[in-house]
Length: 282
Length: 178
Image (tube, rainbow over all chains, first blue to last red; front, side, top):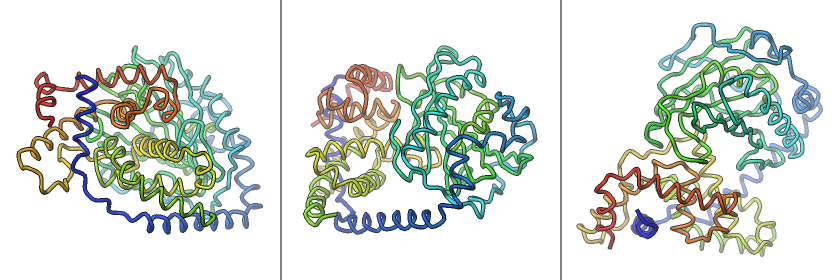
């Protein structure tokens, strides 16, 4: 296939396009409403800033929450080495109801500034530089990327989540684990939706002694990528934070030579150790 | 937003929506999702417009935002998954010669099958380089990576497309082009 074939193919692909079904004027009205909604949310956040800061924001941003989820990881956060936590039999399967009320009541969403998010992202990135190899010992050339939002390292005032890939080589193939964390009091990835997504072949809930929940899903994404599989572990924490660690049987960062592995090369136990790591989360 | 800025944004949205949607369609393979991505992109741009409009490069900004929206959509499994099961999106080309329309439909199906076999960022590089005809430097800027990365991703993307094609497909692709 030559470059010209690609050019011609792309040109033909869009040759018979349907008419635009949205009105740019209506879009502007929607954009204005969106801005008003955001401002209202910020205003509401400011009204409860004392509660938010004392109860959630400061301890979280400063990384002082270690130990809160001590009952999740055997050995606790003080050991510094989160270990596998999926030891109890699943209480829910893909066909059953996911009973994780979310978001938990009475949790006030903090308003993080871009500076706070950058600081927190850097702390998590530095943590992963050492911790990832502890959790996934056969991973080589581990490279945690900058936490960000819409793009790597990009954060904005009021952003309610952080996300980053940690790239590594395993079994001689490059891949990555995606770490996503949403702020307390925000919706985050809805628990019930995890099991109803197309291609989900496994959906297990493991209730933790501290009242938090670990949700494990395996999703076949054939519709997007032939043979692609994503295993996700989501930790729904009692403070309202969600931390998700996802492994792929390919390299989701799109770097390097594309190679599809027969299975996701990180285990559920390893992903669980990352998702329940108290040092990860905002 | 000032009135003058609002007018400029309205003109920008009207003039660029179709072009942005074409790029979005090539990235995601679905007209409806492409339209959603463009709307999300424009809403984000509206928020930043007073700043963006002063850069004199709003198209470049829109392209970057669109790419981010799409990559964001791709890598979160709890977001909507793309539905690319071989069904070709509806076409508005009702007046076209039926034989040509069928050939184009088959070509589109084949193209998207091949495109879906390559990683998102490589697909983005191919769309920017070969559909939007951006230079290596412009593509690197849009994707926030080095020119070397663009070159290597281009080569790998083309190789991956080639590998995904059946042995007869390249000929079919070529022969069905108008």
